[in-house]
Amino acid sequence: MHFDLVRRPALVTCALLLGTGCFHLTAGDKTREEFKPPRRIDPAAIAVPEGYRIEPLATGLTYPTSVTFDAQGTPYVIESGYSYGEDFTEPRLLRINPDGSPTVVATGSHPPWTGVVFHQGAFYVAEGGTQGGGRIVRITPDGTLTPLISGLPSLGDHHTNGPAIGPDGALYFSVGTATNSGVVGPDSANAESINWLSRDAGFHDIPCRDVILSGLNFTSPDPRTPDPDDQTTTGAFVPFGTETKPDQVIRGQVPCSGAVFRLAPGSSSPALVAWGFRNPYGLAFSPDGQLYVTENGHDERGSRPIFGAGDYLWAVEPGRWYGFPDFAGGRPVNQEWFKPSGAEHPPQFLLAEHPAPPPRPVALFGVHSSSNGLDFSRGGAFGHPGQAFVAQFGDQSPDTGKVMSPVGYKVVRVDVSNGVIQDFAANKDKGNGGPGSHLGTGGLERPISVRFDPDNGALYVVDFGVMTVLGKDIKPYPGTGVLWRITPTGKKEGP
Image (cartoon, rainbow, N blue to C red; front, side, top):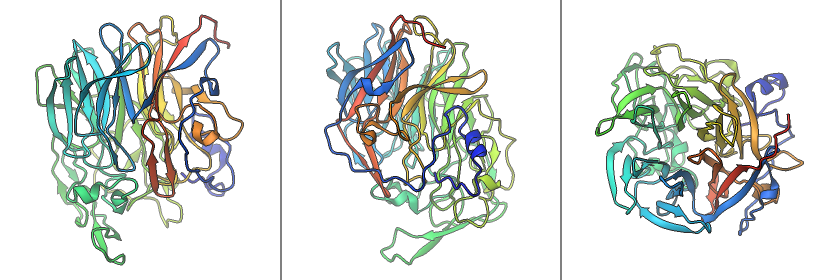
């Protein structure tokens, strides 16, 4: 995201990046250089608090996204099977052996596999559904895969995420939105980044309840035709190339986009928990039973670009609407702050009426930090009871918007009682940060998920691996993913 120092005072920038620290702003964007394998791996390049150490447990993984543990405490990792950059591989569930080598337990389809949890003798996986729609599947230890829910609307920009097991024994999961901000645009037809529009031209965002449109439409280039001068007009919550009218009603349905769901034991019909999220990625329950969700905020791209939207941590209240597509972090997007670079006015509302005033988030992460998987410490040897640990995948600039310095690429700790955020595992550097490959070190690349082991004695960090963004082209590198483990050393942490 581009920070204009003329119209965005530094004090406001610091406020937006609450808890992440105000990074140093430099003149112009630094080009992300091309990565040359192999990936270096060096835990000494990663800073963790005094009294902790970090070590690589498994290496050579291809697009890993989540880790869980069986009843014996053995770690299992899922490999996604898909990465932005339109790279399709094979989704896999892997058992990580004591020597760090993987054993394939199961393979599947409907990538990307975005999350896994072990519960009562089986694994539950969220299949993102870039092709064929999202699913929640059950995998037994012998590798047998059984779909529990199919056809979830996650063919677009964002996917089916989770799952998490609640105190009530139900399975909770989420589905992201099809688009950046409610309108299908040519940004969803980039063959080198995200190209779902060519696969599913009729797909669009689906509200969970009836909504009334303002009738705002957007004219954009039409990538469906060979003529670069061809244009089309598109409204909100409709397929690309479809116009809308003022006061037009879009009927809600479940399952829908941008929502959190609950699947009761033995049921095959998900119940809506809350809606109005953009991309609710990480789901976790705190020790006191409260459901928390991380949300990836809007980008400055597409037909309705939005500037300066951060990522958020929400305490989910059943039945609430969280603001998509007209609010970001509880703030209306028609404010001056959210005006895109070079635009005449801020984004305007897509809805003529809003279901209710949205709440405010528990914590606000940095713009484009891609704050994803999270888990809560339960105390014990690891410490920090009741605090959330969040993996930050890092920015995808300039594809999603410009940044003046790299954002994310670390694990942060959040005090949910006051929203204060502190770095917990981050690359050592003397410049402006970024992944290890950018810094020329063997540190973290793109942390995407974290999970405490069953006795809360260690925090496992899933590192997706190297993924570079050159212009509008995203290039992931298979075989560069790592599973890291952070453990207490017994020494007291400094003040």
